[in-house]
Length: 371
Image 1: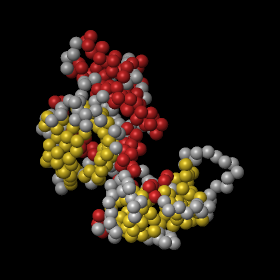
Image 2: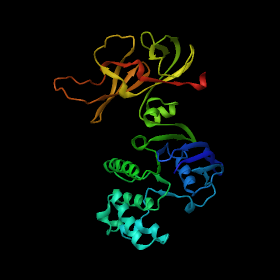
Image 3: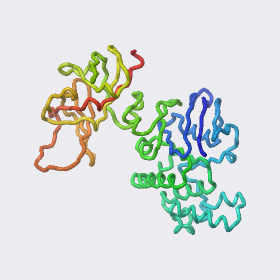
């Protein structure tokens, strides 16, 4: 139940192509996210799955049934929007019961199913209240309960926590995951917030300009981005441009423009795309993978070491962010606050420092335009 398949789906509004030839399979029971900037097409895909928009071309299937031209009420798909759309004149109980009353379910069965659903979303004790008497997070739970009580095959969530404050967003994301595990149906989650998508998703798709850029598990996309867009959109990264000048059994040597002695960096050859001598590439290096020190580390064959100067420091509680200038490049470095030694001398602005990282900690993105 709940497998969704998009085949060559496009959607145009006049001359603007919101979705451009998207093909994708979302597995039964997955919590799947669409992630991307505003206007990338993710909400348009959600609306086409829901039946609120018709594709300009292509087909949409649920469990091998072509639903492309079915009206929304025949799709066994429910949608939760940002504003939750609860009925203000109805109690919490009646809001959740609404869909069952439309179906003319017997009253005894309505009471049983609503109580069970209110237990699942942890709102049974609030069943007699009205929407104006509960919090934003509680409204979201009621919206989820009202959608799930109709037993849809797929639940669509369009930026469902965007209106909540940070702490409540974090708590509601955990509750969404718990509800998903309890009911076991397919959830499709749309957001522009990469931390949300990475937190909730079994798999996710990054979109830009109506097209799919990369699909995979969150950790795979983060550690192995397939493009500069993916590397930048999921978290922070440093990009190092270069050309392959040496390949050995264990190492690939990259000539760069970092203006350091030797002008080269190395990476492990076992966990990267196949490259040849002369291939132009970009390395993605996450800020948390880089160590920073005023003391030069011991030189090792599998370490990259650069010397630079601190240009800016930003204390962020869990970590400090350093901006370090190396030649004409500026590296972003995250230094985790694991413990505090009060006799340590903190790094300071304009101080000369060494940056170093292991050869396995950068990832190759092929420079398609220059090969």
